[in-house]
Image 1 (cartoon, one colour):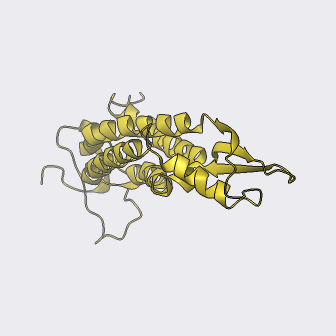
Image 2 (cartoon, helix red, strand yellow):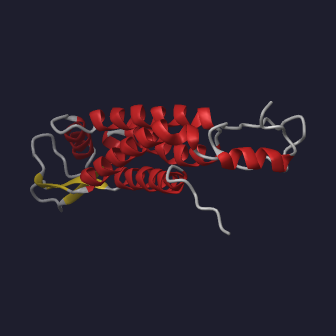
Image 3 (tube, helix red, strand yellow):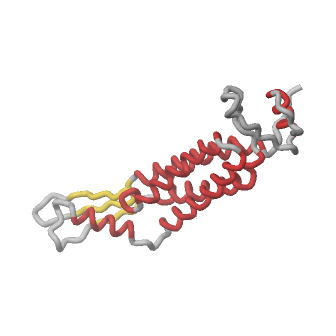
Amino acid sequence: MSARLPAREKLLVPVVLGLLVAGGGAFLALSRTWQRADVQASGAPSDRVEVTGTAAYPAATALALVVLTAGLAILAAGRRTRRVVGVLVVLVSVGALVMLVPGDDSLDSALREAVEKSPSFTGGNQPDSVVTTGWILVAWAGFVLAAVLGVVAALHGGRWSTMSGRYDAPGARRPDVDPDDPMDLWKAQDRGDDPTA
């Protein structure tokens, strides 16, 4: 007879995978070109300048890495730590979304700096055909997904089962038994612990 996982246990794998995808997707989007423009000087060849999301928002790239590693942390952490990691993911994701809010001039400033470093820039010529790509939307989607998954981890992470401590040193093992979870009680008995203690 196979034991079925409780519904709350079924959330662990999607949350972990979702955070890896959200953090990785946001990091990938930030490393791509967000704006490009051509700088043309009379009598000189045109020069194309490109600005990545990382150049405009370096802190957002670091926050994407935090989300990425939080997915692994939730997988390996204990019950209480998972809730803390979930809250941290929500705060980090909201902070990144605030950074990337439309209307901020960080992207335009980064493009201006790139244009001024171009060999075709003479001081008076302005860039032609400025194009903004859709990678900012991918970064936004990654951080929105991470925020939602962080809420799920904060609410349900304390009830997910933890990794086995079977091969830990006997003194390092600390049983973490939820008295309301029959699976935890059976696991404690299998380890030789008294679940009622």
